[in-house]
Amino acid sequence: MALSDVDWSRTAWWGIGAVLGAALVYVVYSFVGTFVFGVFIYYATRPLYNRVRKRIPQSSVAAAVAIFAMTLPALLLAGYALLIVANQIRELDIAGNGYLDQLPFTEETLDMLTDPSQIAAVDWQRYVTIDTVSGTLNSLAQAADTVAFLGTGAIHLFVMLAVAFYLLRDGGRLGRYLVRFTDQGGIVDAYGLAVDRDLKSIFFGNILNAIVTGTIAVIVYSVLNVFAPDGGAIPAAGLVGLLAGVASLIPIVGMKLVYFPVTGFMAVRAVVNDVSGGLAFVLVFALASLIIVDTIPDLVLRPYVSGRSLHVGAVMLAYTLGPLLFGWYGIFLMPVLLVLIVHFVRIVFPELLAGEPLRPYAVDPTYLTDEEPRAVSSDPGSAPAAVEDGSGPHGAEKPGEPTPEDSSDDA
Image 1 (spheres, helix red, strand yellow):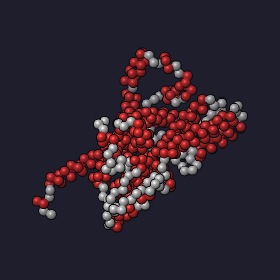
Image 2 (tube, helix red, strand yellow):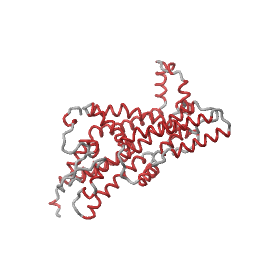
Image 3 (tube, rainbow, N blue to C red):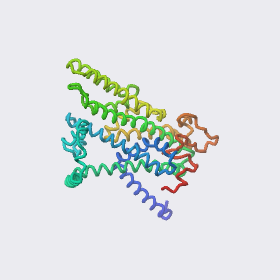
Image 4 (cartoon, rainbow, N blue to C red):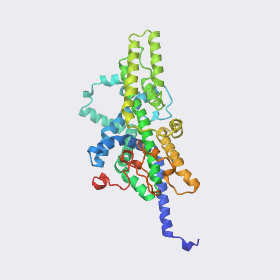
């Protein structure tokens, strides 16, 4: 090709697009944990958003209510549970891979904040005065490390909530745009729906259940220790609760792998040491673990979770290898990569190898729905309609149908 035949204007625009794409990839890579956790918040909040949207037609208001009425308090509660766990890790002198060194609190302050008995004994009225508030503000102004730590955490939290908010509000428009702009024979619609379905199962079904269970367990066990008899307390209550949440990711047995052995240990210790009221406290611990920590979260979340199509072993490996490979956010990022790869291999890769037109019908259409088989068009070139939760890929409504946000002016 001669240089005179090159469309330099189009080439320049492609170059600009490549630079902008590289810049976007760099930003996402630099804050990948924040963005991935924002996607998790989106999937965890979407069922609630769908319910709120039936009563509040404005998508922006519905998304804000779903996030700030339920998600933000839940995140603060989970953060407090992690603070309790961090304090116990520090007390037990367990390596925290440098994360605990970033905590700006003194040991005395951390002990007070994470001990329910000390919090209950505090006279909060004597702290809520003009002098104490102004003194606290002056102290924070002098404690640059604390301010920087809290400020950085607040910025990351804002970005997470913003990602979740705009995915809830505009996810339908984004999904329809991708389908209309890139779809070839329905392949984007089929691939997006399959990915969306499994991400919903992983994020809302498994990881959210683990976070809720772990948070409840940490707080319940820490409160129980306030009433524990001398010599009969739950050992490292916060860590036991955290391990119970992690163990809930294991199929069938779940957190029973944690609280059954702990119950046995506490019972033997109570008998050997002749702890007064020790066996009664062990019974309370076992009942609280079975009913409050194990059964109730499962009953609340299970009706909203669709069946999982991924291999259980592959999902377990993703949960295990993700944090080892990427850090704390690997438990969110690795399952996403697993879902993207699995469905690429199932839906797209066979047609690429065969050199045939990309059509999603190599996959059983019943696999792409939650309950009832999808109605497949007789026209092989037509795209299948998205049916889950009334949405297509990324929460999009059925392609081509008008949506309330399209006709509203609440942008």
